[in-house]
Length: 344
Image (cartoon, rainbow, N blue to C red):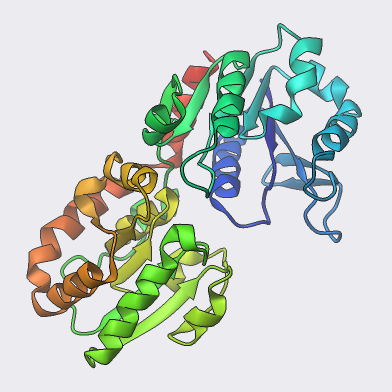
């Protein structure tokens, strides 16, 4: 079977969608399928045609983000119409509008969509909701990353996923479940933007400092709050080998599904922040809500960290159960959803 994925960004760019597409593509290739990823060329040094782990990558230059970008994308994709025509499955990761003209050019071509996230603005605009509904209607089926999408976008989902963890995490990582916590070693994972709650996390750390509670703070991400974060800890930016980098941390600040899954699989205590009702549903409607701590203000975060340091035994069960659950969420399970969606 030949599969054509559309995604705005892909490896070596680092992000949740990029990780998702890479991992399921690798497994599909292992199963004997032919996978091509059509994506944007985000750096000039990247090759137009490339291959990673048996995955063929085609990169196109759609230019700057403006109203005309979709027309440039359609023009670029027209060069690959033969590839589209000959693919057994076309699957868009959020960017279904890339495929829109070809949906009518090849009406019998099986075309699917994965809805990965939400717009950073709250509440979601009517335009965003309408675009998603049109995408849903024109797709043969969809996968939604998170159950909250049904409520906030009115989506009729075929399957729901929350991502996965690599096989090496399931079998080879160290367990930190029974280790007593004597000092707060905290890592933040994600974009350093307001919607991820980084400003709330930084306020909590400022209070810890005022209370003379010692801690170490590492940041694995980037964004507009970088300078503020650098005043509190060390900022590494986005990195590829995250598991080894956070191995010695005992508390993880994270609010995205993949980051939380990765942290749970490593036996960490996860503190997640929400800044609006959508983000709250994003967290509380997840299947691992029992294994993470969810807050919307810095005072509760400080109280939780104090409790973790002084009464760490109270969190042992949560860490153990969260780790056991997360280690079972292999990417192979996510691939099974795709194969079921495609009726293969």
